[in-house]
Amino acid sequence: MMDRVDSYQIGFLLGAVLFILFTFWHGWRLGIVRQAISIVALATAYVIGYFGGGTLGSLLSRFVDFPERAVAVASAAALGLIVYLCIVLVGAIAFKKTSQQSVGLVRLGYGMAGGVLGGFYGIFLVWIMILAIRLLGSVAETQIAVAKNPRLSLGKPTPTPTPSPTAPNAMVRGIAHMKQSLEQGTAGAMVQQVDPIPGTLYTILHKLGRMVSDDKSVDRFLNYPGVKPLLDHPKIAALQTDSDITRDIINRNYFALIRNPRIISAANDTEIGELMRKFEFEKALDHAIHHPEKDTARTGPSPSR
Image 1 (cartoon, rainbow, N blue to C red):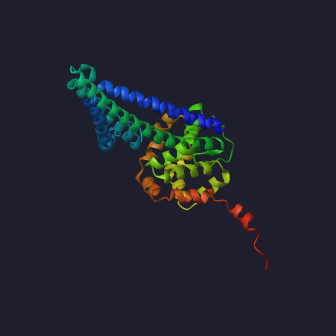
Image 2: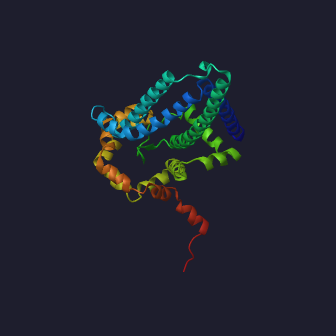
Image 3: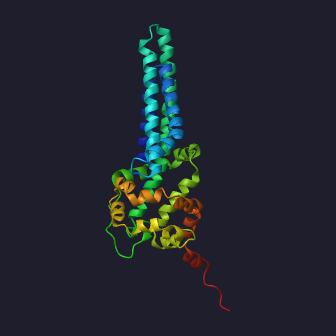
């Protein structure tokens, strides 16, 4: 397993170096001005998408059958892409690229400055890619853990056997392996130091994977205070008995899930949202993965009087 993990890390680092060299070459071709505009376009697109996506999503959610939060994310991505393309197009029209500079010395400096800026831009994109792999890899590990416990459905054990879900595909397993690989050795220590995502998020995902892979842990999670009010809410209870939702979860038909009217209604329900905000999720996970029987075995039986 270690050899395979190491090969993933070496492959990623080699690909990252080649990508940075490509962005240097591309920055050289664009020149300093066009390369700078592309970076400004990306930053502007992010800001406008972040602040404008919610407003646009609220408007569009009235006309499309999707959860409002999902529409907001899609709207932010679409709005940001449009802004990015528009700014880059204006820059391409208004400014020359390196090969269009007539003076040799100016062309050299123009291209070199663009290349250096492009190289730094490539390093930034590799960093973003590493963060995405760590985050998606944590989710993939949880998905693999769920697949090992097919009795789970909608967060609770089913009283009767359900059809076994399909095993995680090669992409899911590959992302999980890549995440584990990037966290190995010296490179892994460096990755964890430069990762701005709070470590608690990775910890929660890891605990979630441990919880869903063990039936007893799931039982303890369901018995934690705060879970019962959520499960007893009429809209949540309706999800637990919906055969279509169960089938789509087993088949991983996520597009159908986010369009399911019951899921949309529950996702947009303010009362459920308030219950979720008050729910201490990590404490519930800690309670679930705690094994009191192991503590009893370690300390031994209490002395008889």
